[in-house]
Image 1 (spheres, helix red, strand yellow):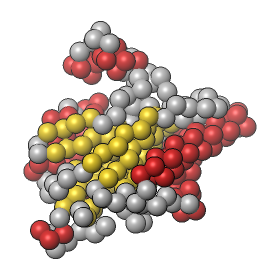
Image 2 (spheres, rainbow, N blue to C red; image 1 turned 45 degrees about the vertical axis):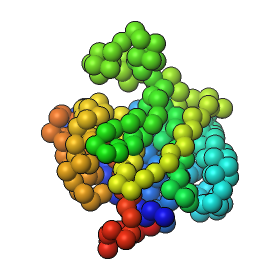
Image 3 (spheres, rainbow, N blue to C red; image 1 turned 90 degrees about the vertical axis):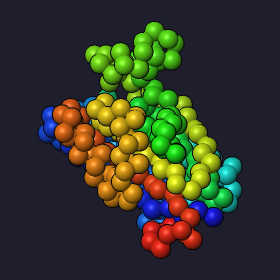
Image 4 (cartoon, rainbow, N blue to C red; image 1 turned 120 degrees about the horizontal axis):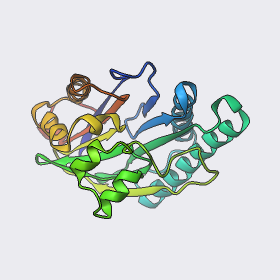
Length: 255
């Protein structure tokens, strides 16, 4: 059985006055979430906070059994659905934040080296294994849909003026479609959850390089945020990283 250790960082970036991102790492290191709000300085921050609070509250109240994959999948779907309703109802009732919304990517760690990821919007989850990055989530955005349709290359997408237009988020509709991705983990793997402020500046290979040369989660978070800021950081940036290791090969870290 692998063990894991996690760390997180968030920064407003170089051009935004307010940080509209929020994240959550549960005290038992089994739930990880990143939310990137939108809808004005007040609305965006509030939307992402409501989403993260909904995840935290439900984990404290009714966490799924770590050994039951079906229960974890169901819990994730129900939790993201409740988070969506929380944001949607608040936007309906408070005219000052009407139209607010948020992306979310949330992961639950189960037993037997299994993780389940759910997401809505363009916040991402990566698996970094053996020096190679794999994007586990599909951005719900206009530009990425054009990439998937073969109408844009990834490089063209990076500089497209509409790259921040998302097609799905929490809070804009009473119901939302949630994507889910199961992950089987191995020793040495890294999971990176992030808001779009990270891949806007850093290419996937650069993210992987940091993980390959920095061995502690805190250091990886610090370096990823630093490189993003050095690159101009036009948006808020948030990262949560999880590193998996065999406890027999390491005397530190925790589960």
